[in-house]
Length: 371
Ligand SMILES: NC(=O)c1ccc[n+]([C@@H]2O[C@H](COP(=O)([O-])OP(=O)(O)OC[C@H]3O[C@@H](n4cnc5c(N)ncnc54)[C@H](OP(=O)(O)O)[C@@H]3O)[C@@H](O)[C@H]2O)c1
Image (cartoon, rainbow, N blue to C red; front, side, top):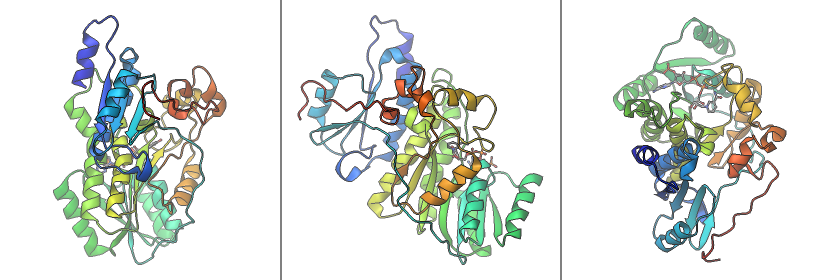
């Protein structure tokens, strides 16, 4: 952030080109091994830097877990306009989203276990909790910093009427002591936790120019610390679903911290593969009617650029179908292909969407790179 500001404040002609180099943060190449998930924060911030300061022609380069210095040198000397590059063995890989189908069947849940939903009283958290109950969960714990208001109490009563015990857990998921105490209390009143949906999150939009360390921490904490603490404090679960966002894939202007927090979740799910723990990061696109993106201003602008929104019914259906997936990262996003392909559409500025927009851009190795 300070580097980008410093570069932007000085008048160079032409502007220098910015390369942000990370190591082991992206699941690319054989084995898709992520060794340094915390470095993915740089990819999230870097994506936003690229949007906010196009003159810097920011390129993110992820090195392999070890080595790669020669390939980096080639990349720096012969860079093209590809914004995101992973160097693996002799290959230079770039990310492209493509259509896929859910690979798992519907997962029946255990009635004698508890399913924990952080952010469970929020928009998407409630939909997830409802779907867990529909799949057979009889104990659902909803965790948030605040308690249920009248509307939430009514919603809880609705789930109870469907046969579920809903346990409300008050804690900041990023506060180790508070989370430990809350989970301890939960274990005394409910069966062991067998599945986690981590949907706690906050938005606090600010450009890189106006961000402060406090504002960054506010957005990073629930996702980064929250995911790490839940992984550690609830070690044995059948699933750990991390609610990430397409913002981590696209790096929207004004959402540097949010993009970074979500990019971390994606890398975290991959990094857990080394421990054998199941984890799936879902890079949700925007949802309508519920949740943090549902305000009237945001959605039409997104839709105009090709990102349509998922209704709670559509999102809930996808959640159910993805719960049993063996993948580490999926992006359930509703796209408007016609809008996406327009010159003003998202695909024009985001090569990662090019294949979905029907304009394949095969990654060409930069001049001088090895085949
Ligand atoms: N809505 C969308 O279109 C969309 C799209 C992509 C991804 N997502 C992701 O989906 C998740 C849910 O979003 P939403 O739209 O449902 O937002 P929401 O309605 O604002 O709900 C977020 C919930 O997280 C809880 N929370 C925030 N910080 C917390 C913390 N430190 N500890 C414990 N709980 C905390 C909040 O409760 P308290 O304030 O009471 O703590 C709130 O209930 C987020 O991770 C978001 O990034 C949403």
